[in-house]
Image (cartoon, rainbow, N blue to C red):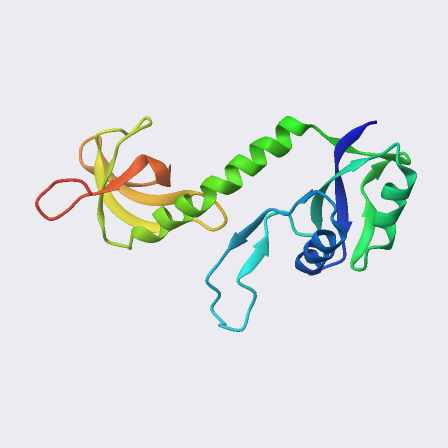
Length: 174
């Protein structure tokens, strides 16, 4: 029995539908997604982390199980290279699952800073410096901060969100 993680290719914007279909069919799978606050309230609130792909855990020796995935509505088929199903290391899927579990806290932290907020860098090469929060950088856990250093020059610096804390008016961190 060779149960491995594979990647199922979905048709455009069908990841959520395929996820529900796989749940209904009892197929072990992993659908990484992020929850967003869209500008249009009728837009999707869940967006795939890997658009067009879902990880499935299947037994390749079981031809019935492997071929059944070809008939799931909204799918194109398993990702293959030279006709062989491409396996994904279990350690990678486990790391992704762990990362996806941490993502809501990271995204919440990103939303806690507003342009103009005073911040202090608590880790990394700029640890100890204070600056002004400028903006979130799209699609990443990074932000842009205005730091004053080296002869009081002000520079824009991209920093990981987890490296920052907000400085209150009294000079303490929150």
